[in-house]
Length: 306
Image 1 (cartoon, rainbow, N blue to C red):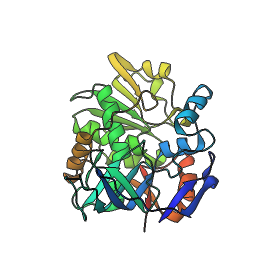
Image 2 (cartoon, one colour; image 1 turned 30 degrees about the vertical axis):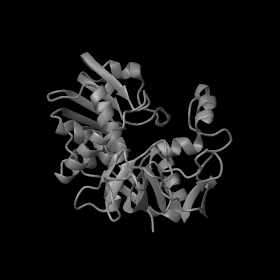
Image 3 (tube, rainbow, N blue to C red; image 1 turned 90 degrees about the horizontal axis):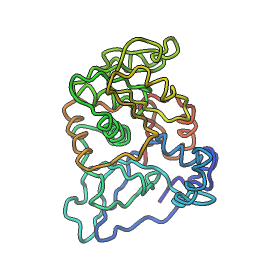
């Protein structure tokens, strides 16, 4: 089968399309023919080992010393079940599924085996594979970090990086929970963020929200530190008493099947809409990484397979 292999740590140039062995499902696994995946900011971090100096040795020990131990990256997928192991009971051949397996990687390929008990379920009805692949990464991370920030009805929430994969999901989910949402993004993305339900949108190239009098119950930084968000100290100046500061670079998110089921339900109801910036074929995954590395993608960058 075709797959995109990371031959070393580095930029997109280390990604190569190769033929590798097609996997066979074990007893509790399902074999998925992948139709779409996504290039996430986390994939970019892993490929380039973009971590702080103190974290480089631990990161290499976890991911691989000289190159990624799991050379086929890709954390999310949407596709069709082709075969199942003998102990599988929930899914069968022909099921259309989507999944998020951050520690398994392997989605930059034509096929992938996943354990049935993972964060995996059937895709929202009426959605394409590409649309389904745009939901798990941003949706699950946004849901987890909003909960850590104490999301509930009536809260005043500010989402910095509101036009990215996590940000576009966070805006919609915060509105679903009844919060008053302010999105922060560049001027080019103001209308997009407003269309997702933000009550107010701030263009960070023209205004600095950390110098305003408006206070928030939750400030969610939805982009990584490498993209240069405001400091925690600056953000805390606009927190209301008892307010919380939450960043996607703080802590490991909890990824739960029940949350993917919630995202599926919200997507089917039209409450959560996947945002896709661009799509590339599998053979152009390196080009997709180059675009993601620019740090200005809107929502998700999708890879179509087959």
